[in-house]
Length: 184
Image 1: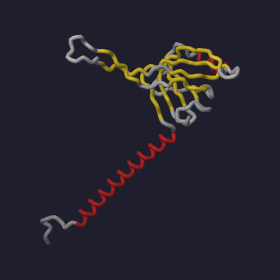
Image 2: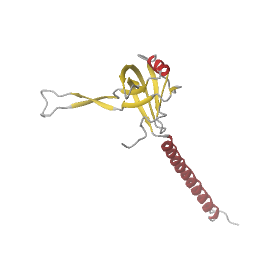
Image 3: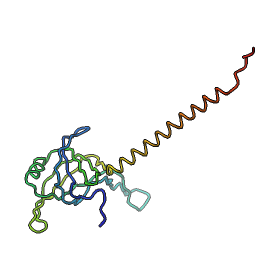
Image 4: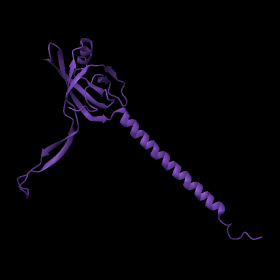
C-alpha cells in the first residue's frame, strides 16, 4: 500500500482545544496508531417522491453534508488516554497533524472509547468522534508552501507588468510632440 499525506505514520498528533475562531491546541503526541475512518463531507439525500408525480422514478432532495464519524485507534498511553477520555461528551475543536504536515481540523464530540486487544498483548483503544459542522482538509506544508510561492510569483509578475506598462506610457507621453497651441 502506498503512503499518502493522510497516513497515521509515527509523529501523527491529535490536538484538541476550545471551540473558537482560532483555537489553541494541546497535542496528544505519538498517540494515533491507525485510522478506521476519516470524516468527509457526504451530502445527505432524502426521498421526495410523490404518488401524483408524472414520472415513475424516485426523486431526491439534497440535505446538509454529513461528515460521518471519525474513528481512530490509539495506543494505551494511560496519561494521554485519561486526558482524551476527559473530553468525552464535550464539543471541542480538534486538529489532526499528520507526519507529512497535512492537517484535518473539525469540531466534534468524543462519543466514547471501545477497548480492543491488538497485536501480541499490545492494548489499544478506539475513540469515536462525531464531527459537528465542516471538516477542513489542508495539504502538507510543502504543498501549501509551493502554492503560496506560486501565488506570490504570479502577484509579483502582475505588479511588474503594471509597472512596465506605466513606464511605457510615461515614456510615450514624454516623446510625444507637444500639444497644439505651443507656438513660439
